[in-house]
Length: 419
Image (tube, rainbow, N blue to C red; front, side, top):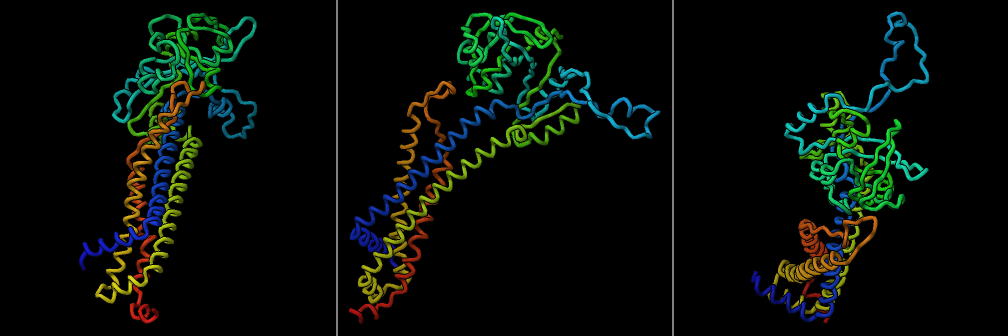
């Protein structure tokens, strides 16, 4: 078997049917181009949505939920311990949402090697006072540096500096939606009232915009010290401890562990965002399905072209076999034709796919709900290009193998006798 001779014959057949060869190569190129662009865009979109939701969510949240005591007073009584207890209208216990011994817990979590970072938070329910109107709001007392380190807080502060919360006393970063409702500008003061009836005037040092309008109409941010002052509590008053882990997949396991260790309630990110993760997974599956469908359709085009080529080149195949070429050699000739189309179309498709992704990445995409996004999201993952390249070769090989096998079984005597 002379490999060079086989390749020369294959390329001669390709040139003889140049127009059909070009059409097949264009089909593969188009399929790979759209496969790369579609997956890059959908992956970028998933990353954008993950940034809006998952990156703003702690991997594990420790808190102290207010709930009824497991055993009511009548059940603790020795006098009625052998009686049936019919209890109704149970009220929550009088315990506060405060995490007891929070300073020691935070210190211990900082030394846990599985924990990437810890951010304390104080949650305060308030009313924003606008004249005689009271708007419902939520204020989160945060440590600005920790919040920015773990949740990229600065990316969502559209005006002002997030570190001003630590520098300026009684300051607030107001949700953009709430600010627009109250017609408040940066530097103005807003008066808030807690559910206990305590009032405090806060200076607006910036605006926060998450991209989710319902959140932006309710949530605002102050420092932990200001939140404690609002509630009239001491400096060790903490309602939530937010954790980011080195490995997010450990969140369900560590949530249960910390829940038992610190006698707190714990919520892991998988449980909190299960529906959101399902949506991202479904979008990815659809993208792969569409891309693979395009490649399969291109493969059928190559199959049809090679079939037609075999019928038209029966004389040439008979002559080749009559002059000493084996069925295996003929099969290799047509496989070389198929793979040449696949390799050329695949490489060109990868280049065009990257170019189309770059073009989409430069297209302006500005919306008031996503202030940090300026262009359409694209994720340049080398894995997509690897999949596209492998599929282009595999698809064209399979598309060419059946016609090649048919050509290898041609009987030269019957062809020449028929002529």
